[in-house]
Length: 295
Image 1 (cartoon, rainbow, N blue to C red):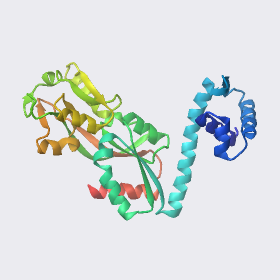
Image 2: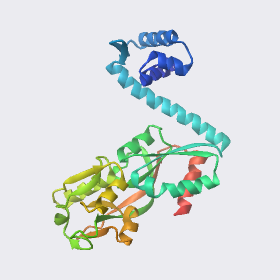
Image 3: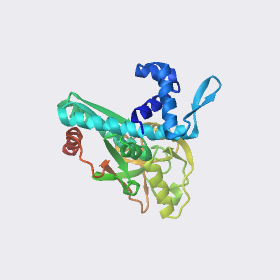
């Protein structure tokens, strides 16, 4: 298979235009069209179809574009890996993190690392659990920093636990359950403010309900970030199930209050995740060492 033609096809698929792809690649539009036609003849499958005055991907074209993106990400990763090893102190580290470490841990780690490695570019992406592991597995990230349960770890991922964090039920200080001890059944009658489906905290709460054979709570509000959920509860509505790292300052200051649920002592793990059977670059190992030295 012609890998050059595959990359050319991906640019057309990504931009949705032969003309735009030609401009990006600094070649003529007829040359792009001609190479795409030859590529279709080589593989024996149509990649584009006419729609009005423009073109759209065929069903196979859409599937191939997704595979091509993974291949290009892997190629970019390998190029970066070689460069990092060659220069040692320059290059980029792509980090994907779930919301807890991204908001409450990585900023300090990144600042410490940059103070010692000014020329290294750190790129941090925040994602839910599923997306974070997918980015790591498909070479879109060099390292994943994960906060959640160990049961969610894919087989392809090497997991190094850093520490455990307590999970708390939290309400506004004027809530009837504030600083009280109640049953899990009563707690689950409260409206909850939660992150989107795919977040580890949400999955953990629903797993607790299943284990204790109680109905899961009503999800009254749903946000894509931690800070929004905290602010909503501080405003006086609903409850949250959340890492103590995210709210202990607010609880200490009296802006939020814990609810103590009988028989529930939940924790989750914060871990460094890398791909199995893969030697890490010097830069990635430096960043990992920075994390460990800060604990």
